Length: 258
Image (cartoon, rainbow, N blue to C red; front, top):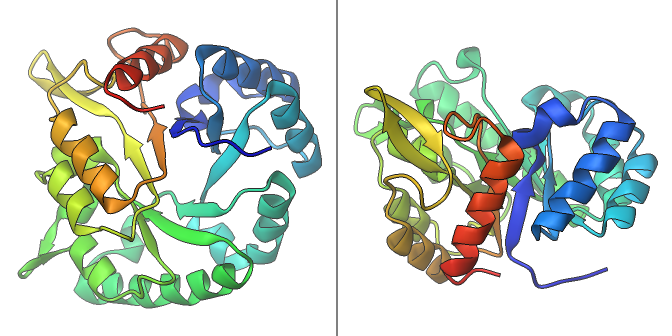
């Protein structure tokens, strides 16, 4: 099953509805009914890879990405590869980096070297390794941010970016500029908007917040992005992650994505 659809739902957004195999099956079908043809695997209850593949096929969605912990990349890479092959998934992203793994510039350089090594192994299996950022990567160590150090000291053949637009903005960066500078190194991007509520930054549905979406999407297109992955860590405006994903889907379609 192959499609050219660009829009993808990050299942972590729906983690409260993925707590059992029955929940997972039902949620995948709801996501497909919204219009999404692709999903990124994250936040699921433990489930056999083969059983999940059957659910994906039954719902009519493709698993185009997966979020992994550094511990799994270190300790169970072979098991992860088997799962990705079962699902037909060709992208795996490091989802988060604990504070003890990024305490200074030297630590960022060490992670760059380590992820290059792991990415090289995955490349031989037809899988592309990515790094998914939050806001802490925007901390400076001298003249460079942690994220700049990571990409400057890793091999682009073996480590791609999965820029998260909201977290870049919350860290004081320009999402469009980051997407533009990673041309050819960013097959997938995480889209989420940023807004303010009661003087506090919040997550928002795409097009309902303050990010410059024309500039971001233009930069993504020029950089060669293949999958636009919609995620919300929380949904303070709708209080309903399904509704939030549907709003983002509708708005992104209106912006020209398919």
